[in-house]
Image (cartoon, rainbow, N blue to C red; front, side):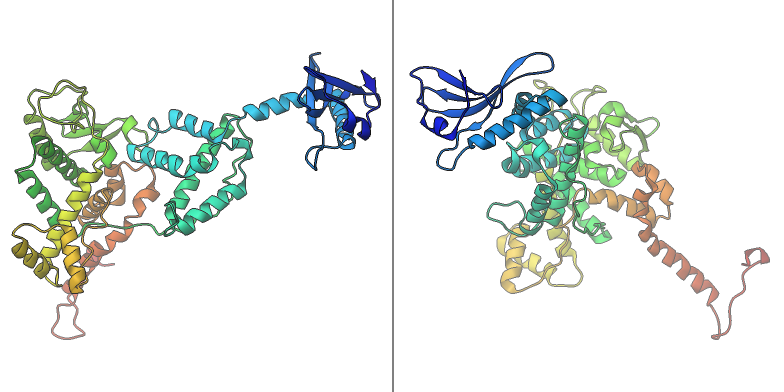
Length: 482
């Protein structure tokens, strides 16, 4: 049915009793008004695609109470669409269908987790990615289309985390976490470009927060407190067999980290087949190293002895594929497949807290030693760090930080500092740590100040031995002359 559509006609036309009815316009061909039995009125356009397929596109609902589109607007839109369809092969319905089926942020997160997290990242990194996705990204943009996210969206999120953090109800800002979240989003959107889900990366150009590179190394006093803590835990009795086994495993991991400078993920993933006891070598497979390359590390005599003791305590000779540090239970258990340890967060927290108490107790200066001693006598047991902190706060005593801020990765930095103190070169240190970039090892260069200062002081003592201020001891031979 064709006739020139007018505003009065559109307004007055009655609804059919069943189904729907279309009234086509004589001014713009294939443009019409569709009326349904429930009274809904919409402007439509019939067209053919370049392949000859007949399609019907809904331009919009009829304006009612200011909602919808007017007849004039719909007729103009239909005329423009017809030109694009005829001259450009445009298919408006296909565009609409593509938009509806376009991947969302939830789809992007799902594919990223399935194809990248856990397979190409260390366990701790994977855990951080999953936490950021579940706590920050999905709650905010779950249903948003990947192609819709703009620079302003990323920038706003970065600013909010910087100022208020990610805790519910706000809280203190988290500038480093804001940078990590943006870095994760940048990686995800780079993959979205590769998967042809969008054409650009909206993270590009985001100004990151300034970060101060952390430099944390164990002092001799802190190392002594840490080793004493490990000895205490190894000798502890009274807890369950399972708990003692897990604590002992954590102690062994920490000792090996101190002896090798390896990353915690590499160490926890160690398998017996990677260790050559005859040559004293540990061959880390590429799948476990950050640089994704096989890394051969010489093991010191104490490290080899530690590993031999672990092996000798096993109920039977381990297989090459068995993990050195299994993630579960009792010795002799054979009902489950052996899997390597993946985290020791709780154990490390306990070790660090007890080591801090021992460190405070060993202080030559300060009031920490007296406070710990007093608590031990009054409690008739070893005080916890929480009890020491509480007593110090009550007494108005400012305690030293101790090992409270020591991360497990700082054991790796400390290993490097031990090497520097022995005068080893940066290339040697980089080779032991498995660095592929000289710049990575160069961050330890400032530590050379102490051994260099000691060396120059020794020379100063030699050349300044005199009976008077102007007397200098000559060097032994001319070949030493500069």
